[in-house]
Image (cartoon, rainbow, N blue to C red; front, side, top):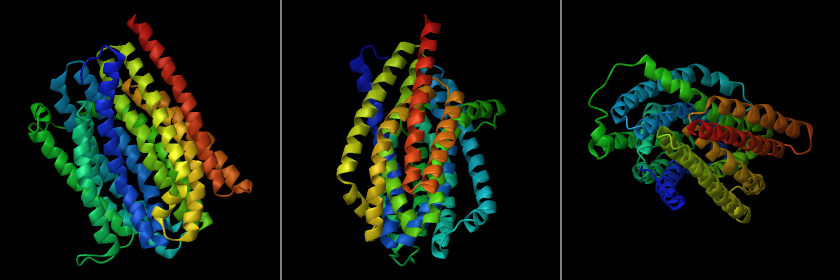
Length: 451
């Protein structure tokens, strides 16, 4: 990361950071993409089981990962303010936080999972797949959370290409392990959809070990000597991480959990609808990696500039990021509209599932523009360390507007399952409007203080 003077330099630096993040996010989500696609090609009941399991897991994992992502603006500010000696302490404390949260999640899952699944109207095989998928996935929770901390440190230095290489190298391994555990090869039994959870858990261990080795031995990370001095847990640093991270995590949780809540509510429509909804949502989430990557890049560059008190530069980066995210998402939405039937065919050979998935994907087209605004805006706000009001806006937009409207349309009109998707689109649009207003206020406030 370096200071930039012109818009051309800013654009160049943003792309140097963004492109590896985008490839990394696409590769990370490709694990879930291949889990879903390969499970669907095993059996539609297995696709539905993975849908239920991932709907319980994704909001928890992304929400808690959002807490750990607080390390990105924390270390970016320290680097921007030339306080590099404080970075290793922050990273080690982040690892302690990650391990603690992972243990709590596993304990809670052990206590609550059976009760939650028993209260859902699921076919017996679908419930078994969901349960064993989550049991297998639990093997990789601790390394996954630690990896989020290590990646936050790597990205805060602007070295996002390293995260890209680590994640890309693990993707073919994940696909190969899916092939073994889902379909039963090389002497392993066929676990069906549940086997994708085991494949993903092993992959999480591999990328965490790889990241730790890179940080310990490769310059410039090795200069920070992260693993050479393990300090005792610090209440003060944990408080800083949680005070910044909890609103960030809750904001992400409220956004991702509404999608999971809709999937769980879809269980009343039967296995075919669950499978088609999950396939469409999985691909829509894959496309969401475009604005999400811009969001993460915004956190890095805006955090770096605000840490150095260059508030006009931070504002310029925000404008570039939002404009480019809109352009990318509009193109992605157009391509999805054209090829929705072909996309649906990747997830299943069942004619009913393909037909219904293609219909759901029409609604997914409208996700793109709202996501293109609200995601980079959230990333910029995190760069300013403005997270509390953002969290409240997300709560209201998704849970007070989007989900109630979806329930009303799904249960009180002839729209049925499609009503939930209309509710989701409305909630995302409300979030885009309110968050943009907040960013405008924060940018003007910081600029006035700097005068």
